[in-house]
Image (cartoon, rainbow, N blue to C red; front, side):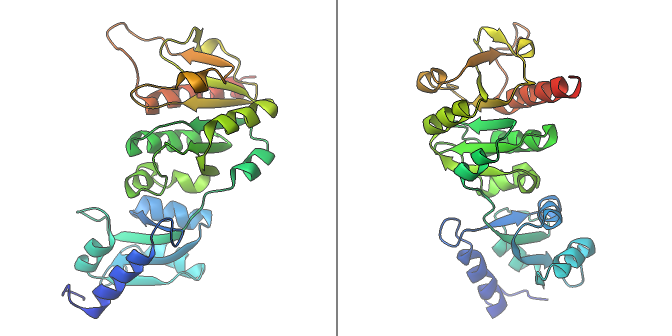
Length: 262
């Protein structure tokens, strides 16, 4: 077991993590058994897996990693803490190369149900949206320049591995994107607490792109002028609004419901 923080193996592990600088090396951390498991199952470009040793703490993950030629390194709890971005690591961490796609390529694949994040900054909200997108069968997610970085460790954890089962593009210029989506024939629908259209009265069987704005101020007027509809979700007068993650989930599963019963 490796116990000393001065141990050269710990220093080497720290160097590996430092090499995983998100925009320099185009690598990021995947933490926890759910995230690492989903990454390995989806065939994500994992370069190395760390587990707490001695012994094989996550045998299924290790077996799958080695089957794909990915090295698995058992380390001490001290090393795991040095690698992880959390104070209480889950015992397994992987390094993956970036998995985002070119937005132009995603558009050429003609998505039938897309989600646009325009200024969603909370990692938890954004992670919830990614999970709901994957669960509801969305075809693509586009993250705007003002949206939280999808490789932020908190965001990666919040997706619980769903980000590996969903094509997405990041740092997208939203106004350009809305124009492109419109030219492809998608109806662009913004979530808006005061939108005149009620969400379950809109035909989401059509090709649709949901536009979700910032947690505090929603979709800006500039972007709202570029969408085809602004929809609201009726609720009790005792509640002012849903957070953006919950609103996205309602819209996505309404679209899934309509498409299921068409």
